[in-house]
Length: 112
Length: 113
Image 1 (cartoon, rainbow over the protein chains, first blue to last red):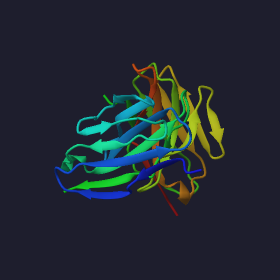
Image 2: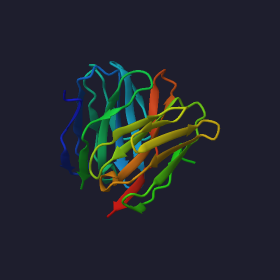
Image 3: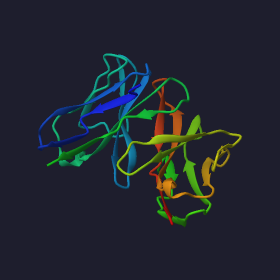
């Protein structure tokens, strides 16, 4: 049982480049979300989805796009990378209701 | 004011000590509560859910006080392996008929020999 799979684990981008962080879950969870974690800031919600075809903005959505064409996949796209987007990114999924969230292993992104 | 607040620590304690972490949340409509553990450079993992009646799992005890909007985690007989960051997490309903997790900044625990 793979759970939540994130790729890549590490990435270095130049300012202005675009890229997509992949996230897939095999637990048939309705809810999926993306967080970024910065020192002293905790995890902050970027975008989330409550089901296929439905997405919404979280606390820090600027500079990121998401789509949810299937239940399993929830990619995060950086449109034009900036040094301020250097962070660790986590994807999470959970079933509907008050249940725990499962996290991917994270993507360490550096923008130079 | 942050929605979920924790003392960042670090808490430095000797092996065998008892240590308690506190967390306050601002959204009175919050529905469920959790403690997650995060090891250095790893993803957060659920430690335990927090129930209104309080709950215990081995050396770990969690308490919830809805009136004061306060959550606690007690660790007894600390082990070296308990060294980690402990995240207080609150789930609240949002406008999209879903629900969202809000994380505290985490409390770092270091257990020393």
